[in-house]
Length: 268
Image (tube, rainbow, N blue to C red; front, side, top):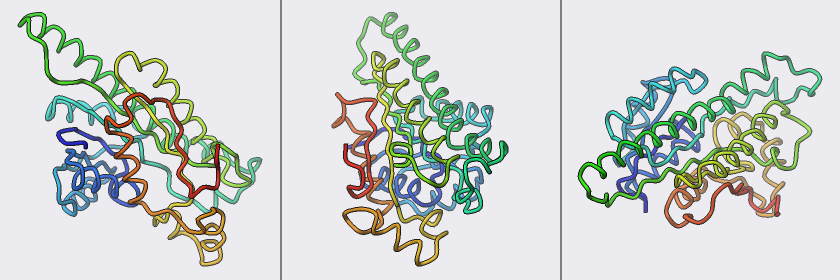
């Protein structure tokens, strides 16, 4: 389904990002760029994937680091077909349970730097690289008077959460960041659909990763599990399979959508 596609996945060394890297590479034949701030963790994760992939280091909150990543990928592969903006600020209980009026500017800024600005930086650089490649391809076709058989397109999937849609009584900095991500998806979808760029948001409910499930005690886990009609946590591999479907041509006439994946808690 994604054979010969090149996919960048941020935050790909564990949890949902790692599951996406495995599913994209092993099940669908994509060449996956496994990204992390720590290159050793990226290498370790890549070695656990039985498919085509390569580790790369990037700090998504650093614009220069992101720009250099995209340059390296374009230099090696000549194209970026899929971008998954998965990297997010870790689940910090101290911040999560603070009231909005108690949140410091620094705490909000740290979460926005990863969740929002990281998605902005990566999306912008990938779009720039793609549009530049279109100009180059057009010049080549004009010179050779031949049409390319390669269908150029980019799919960007941003990871948000259900509080961005319905709000939440806790975790206001996370909700603010994730709400802005939905806006980012819509802007990209409207502006660049004409250039064959599609964008989507996955608004996730309770997914059993170490960052969330692993940070809770048993009572908190049980409380979260019964929130959905399915009465359970979602699994990272379930999110990965949904993302792979969205990234494929099966979704070719849809863009800008916020797709809720939460076991049926929010239905719109």
